[in-house]
Amino acid sequence: MVQPLHIKNAHIWDSSKTAQRDLYTTDVVTAQPAKGAQVVDLDGYIIFPGLINAHDHLELNHYPRSKFREKYDNAHQWGEDMNVRLDTEPYKSLRAYPLWDKLFIGGLKNLLCGATTVAHHNPLHKYLKWNEFPVHVLQKYGWAHSLHFNTGEEIQRSYKRTPPSVSWFIHLAEGTDEIAAGEYKRLKALGCIGSNTVIIHGVGLTPEDVSDAIQHVRGLVWCPSTNIFLLDKTSPFVQHTYAAKRPSWRHTDTGCNVALGSDSRLTADGDLGTEMLAANMTSQCDGACVMEAVTCRAAHILGLDDIGHLHSGAKADWIVDFRYQRADIKLIVKGGVPQIGDPDMMAKFPAVQTVGAMLDGKPKRIHIDLARRIHACKLKEPGLEVDSLPKQGFKLWGLL
Image (cartoon, rainbow, N blue to C red):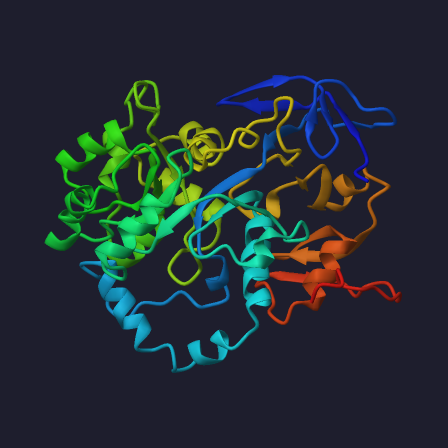
């Protein structure tokens, strides 16, 4: 059972504004405090909804950031360069780890930066359905990799079997060459541009493509640090859908949105916080729009109405005093249960048994169940050191 909470005196973020109000939670946000709720005073703090990472390859986050040319004209070239090296080191050894461990590290990377919901761009492995996974993973989605690594028939089949209400994701126009510039029209000719289409990257979109996409697709997921690393350029979609005076990435007639994704550490600079910082540094947006891109706008793209906000009925995922650097976040809560936070913050929840840890050189306390999973994982999260567990037996879910 989740301990009900009554959070008092904090300022709650809501669509670029904050207001002081009480927050009531079980595993979801409730309109009134539940019976027996623990009262926690967070006066002086700002609470944000758990962040949404709209694009990650969860099983690729234990690899080093890699490229083999100074700059690529198209990410397809990078993909081919990568594929011919998979049986060389360090990739060969890193590929050999069990799938669970690889996925777990991807989930942990997200949780530690405050991203409690992730859209995984690959098959929905059984492990991603478990409640014990570190983050919530989007369960209903369609996807194809790209026009380069899938045939037209495969892409059409994937799109047609995805219900219109369910988001369908594809890497598209991830380059600066003529091939990338022609991909939107190719996808449209295949009949795969629609109200549930979500474009990943979109760096090579032409102005004509952008104008059409704003009217017809659900949105675009922007991965700025990957784009700059591989292509030295980011998507024009962001600039074209950004209003100069009142920052807004929403086309009011269509609901088209821009979200942020962290891709994976194979190409990105770090985690979702790093992407938010990279987005700010492009000067295409301000901090308010960046926060919307990882909350309400990302929720729209994923087709979910119970994340990205802290109104009644939302998942009880929240973070205290968000910062781009993960170690500076005061507290991260998933499903109404504190998972990791500063020692003084975690001490406000005495029912939660914790273990000491260091995250990027700063002291933290981690929920003991999460600490057990971290110790059981064969891979290690860079920058995280977790103290030894209490000497008591435990069974790791009985599932592995």
